[in-house]
Image (cartoon, rainbow, N blue to C red; front, top):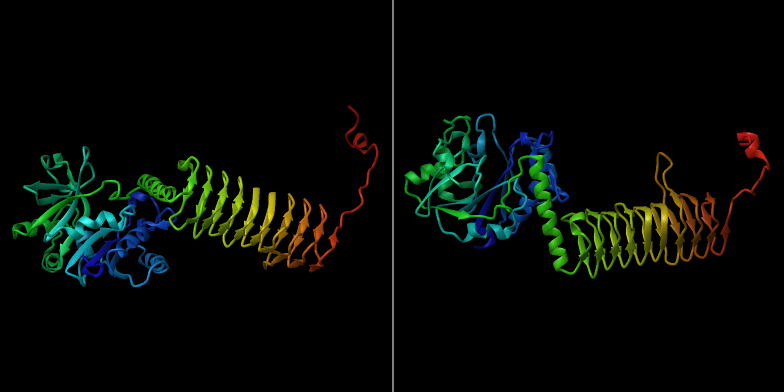
Length: 434
């Protein structure tokens, strides 16, 4: 099946009350992106016609998804008059002859796991899996390889509750089935909702071909609670890390490492335990030591940490960044910053050494200013550099100096320490003798 032979409808209108959150369920993050992002991303690999049905916090959902994707069709569900999964399908006009219906709270689905829906020939294809404890799921009655009907747990009788085949919540319909049966749906049930599953029973009465397809329980896992969210996060993290380790990235105790979906690696990289890599980060031929955090930054041919914090918009190349060093929105090439320093809004060139306790003072409470440091600059410990400032090549900044001049010229040494003053006997005068 070609990419443009199938339409995809993603149901994302629910509140998700079991999440115990003011945020719409599909906007909760997994590996750095909302759940709905992951399912749209997978959908775009197999279809050019994506529709997302929304209602609760519809403006926020549209705004966030539009920041990631173009050409997504959003459909507002009338939840007051047409609640439920069947109500979500009202007035939808898919372009293609086959229509795949997905749920926005299944972030672990990938394009490969949907292959069966694309290759199976039937009027309706529905996903199932077998569970020893099917509590909470709709039951699927199957006979001679054909789905007979589905019943929601809250509407099931005692015999139906014993069925182990459960509805995984994903369907593929022919366009004709949607056009014929969606308008016929009724809300004559315990919850007074329109169920998409009722299409199965109506289609069965008309002897349509309804095939079940067994799907991977892990990939089709729905997220209905914070516990589900946490479980899904672990699964996705394992998937992300297994991918990069297969491609040659070394990871020490990978279960302790967090890597978002948007992070990429190049060349030979080593990630030690307890690291957190987020955003549009690139790690290229570098060693990230234990406990370090890197956010939306590029690190090339460098070693970072342990316990370093590289904040967004930083570019670090051919550098050594040691423990308890924080870098924000700065470019460092060929630099050593061994320990206990803050470098913000700075540009630092090769051969420069940043001593312990160095701070670039980039914020005056209203505006932020840039620090430019040239090549082969030696900055002593406990130095404060007040931006805006330029320190040219081949400069020494003596330990304990507060640099306030707008420019330090090449070849200079800057120092503003006061001469040490010693007052003999002051300790005993102040505290008394013991």
